[in-house]
Length: 193
Image 1 (cartoon, helix red, strand yellow):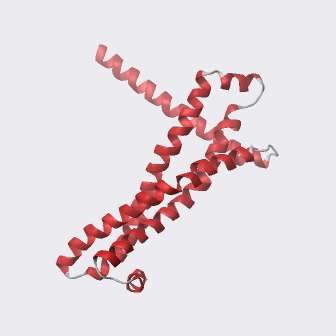
Image 2: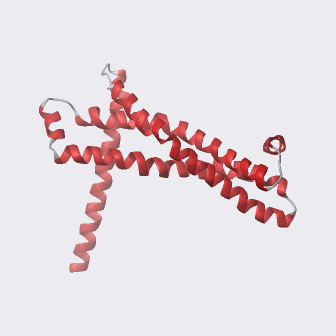
């Protein structure tokens, strides 16, 4: 009986967590999309500040990791393709792997680890210090004031960061091709077409 109770409690708490997460996401989407069309202003300065924090300040780490991931993919791909006599396919393989899979995935992991943890720490600290209760007392909706600018910033910056990560991964693969495999940049770009 105790096992069934613990499984039931874990299931209920898991479903409650997912429900609360869906409710928060819905409220943020409503604040960003629906409320704007109803004439309610979004804190645009806060959204720009969050976009700078989540996007522009993440460029160095995204660039560095994507560059080296592209280099490693080219190195491993060249090792295998050399056995088949198909070294000319390294550039295309790097481009496909980076743009279809690893560029978006690595960007998401880096942004979640860097910006997502910062957002969670900020809101958690505000909750502990009862600043969120103070916002509610002043008739400021916390989701509209705190979550919506962060949500909008992430929606706008993730495609930009992903595109940049794809570019840097391909450049990293190209750098290996030029330095380690004896290719030229012109040959690499012609193999990408």
